[in-house]
Length: 465
Image (cartoon, rainbow, N blue to C red; front, side, top):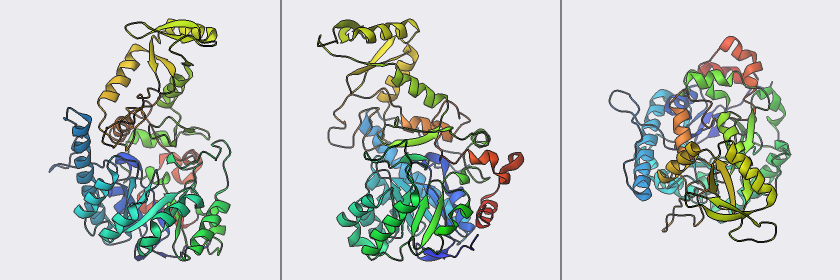
């Protein structure tokens, strides 16, 4: 294993080791500050981060607004307050070492307002902003205005080309690096395009080499690339170091930092990570964002699978094979199914899945009355955490809607991520994880349930293991 050489990130020479920013309450000021204190780049999540009262207790994010727009404004206030608080914690924990970055999702609700609010409120405490989940054209302008480096997250050279041509070329001095996130292996939301097969993973090397060639064309020879998704042992990436085809490279770890003493996730979640087997991570498209995402295949995911499997197409009037009437809803309004689908629907109803819910695609899904009530309640309670949500049909526009029916095949992502981030509920909530999470079980570093400190993990990574 070649020794790791420090590189310049966000204006300072640091280890080329980066903590990946992970969603609501999963990567916070304590974990990112510890990573920076170890000489690398710590990244806390700027997505609805936690705030604390004078006693150090988490302030519950309770929404009191009667309308979505009122709750949306509450969400923005929570988000700015929480991210500023986490930046302060990270700054103190880092003790002047390393760099502190914040991760935001471009498709989160009010991303621009929140980003401006946090960078203004945490002036000088945040050195860089990583941003993905969409095409964050304006992140460059916002970060440049605050004197902060920006790090777009892309999954292809083509995506970066579009960002560069449209906006980034005007703010090149603040482009700190480009994060290449493997769309088949990374945890959380993934950047698979419509032209890529989710079942046919591609090697990251040629894709990153192509990204570097494009960056060289743009005069970004010395701008580092962060390799994210699928990174576990650095010895497996030794041929990327000092490689002129790859250029300056840093490695981003999203999954391994989950299992550290500073990680804020519950002990139940940490224990669950140690039991995962290869194949337990499921690449799915249930997210209300519309993106693919990678999560542990647990009862939460299984229920979503089954919900979509209990699905039939319908028409409002008899047409073609859709000639068999079927009553829907409390008023028993008729829709028309095929003969085979009517038999399937009647069988589901007999099993207790008596509620037929309409989807935006002119299909019905069949769920229990309790599940139907939960879905409708969650849709009504929407607080606009995304710029556009297929589940609730909220959209960040004048109309406040996507213009489509709310989709009962999805879920409230804010609700489930808040639940798993603040409780021991690991089986009945969404548990994002990278596809290498199964390696916790076989990695000797974690033998006998050992949970390292961040400093111990960073030291271990530098050995190649």
